[in-house]
Length: 421
Image (cartoon, rainbow, N blue to C red; front, side, top):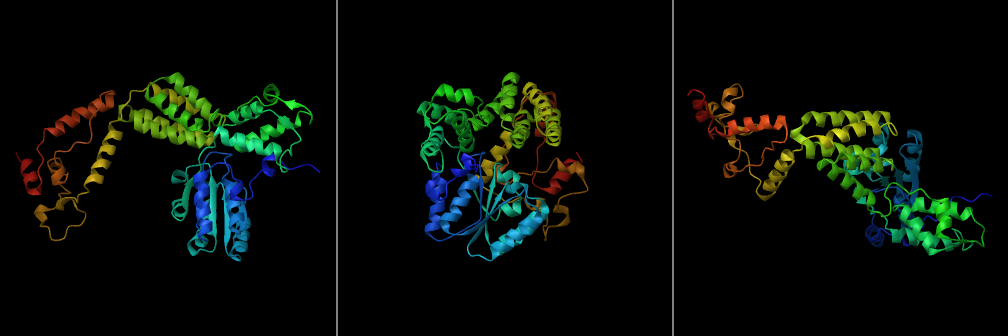
């Protein structure tokens, strides 16, 4: 009889078996202690135990559980699983790739969530704030799993070597070799188990497996992170900073590194944000081209997607930069937090009781530029400061200066008088 894969055999059965994720495990144990359940979404990079922890939590809670996959399982299978879950109390439905639920599956799930027929634990590698349907997101607690450290992965590998469910002590592997496997796994414990299994199967039981032996069998790193569990996120950060700093070769390198992980959705989100945040008004055409290139990348998929993405990375990196719009909204955000103020009467959508001559002049565009739109206490506030790095924003700056020569008034009647001078 052929054994199931090592990664499958080493899956934790209870929360006490989970490696790492101390904050999340502490929260889940508190739910168990208080005998409470809620619907949740676990998100984080591949191989860090999202589905495994969901199943371990259900086992520890002694709840009925069923696992579905939003991509593979059709509506009929989901309907059957939901029907079975309703018969148990408590019941947890675990949904892998929950952000990939299509509309018909969402319509099937939502009434059960609203009625509390069962609890859901969704698992996804995509940020649910961006990728998840808002109706589902609002009914679930979003919990991010932390990338596993090298030490976490090393602990898992040591456990697998000695565990009866793992190699059962039948293989002798040096700590140096296990440390190497932990490093190239980039925080992906499943990847590490797969590499360990490949190495173990390559040598006899009495052979001391050394670092050199490991490198001979497992020489390809897991490109999702490299060396450190945080490296993927560090790479994304370096990618954006390279575009902002206009070093095109660095930006292209980091693009290639991230794409090796297969994280197409992640790089597209980051590129579109970078385009608006760092290039912005200095080159709006490049921002538009970025969006179009990202749409093409989505349509063709990997590996061909790297071509339109490389196109826009070069375009953005070599474009002039302007963060004026970004800084303007950040300054306005801060002011709103400090002192949210109501709008002036003549700017309100519905202002019963205001005389017609004091109402906003929708049909008199020549009056608009003379009116004061800021609240009284903010009249002297300025949030937008032009950058002159691009031709387009220089034109905006010129118009900005002209508009600033106008004395605005807080009276519709006074503004109308200005048009007659």
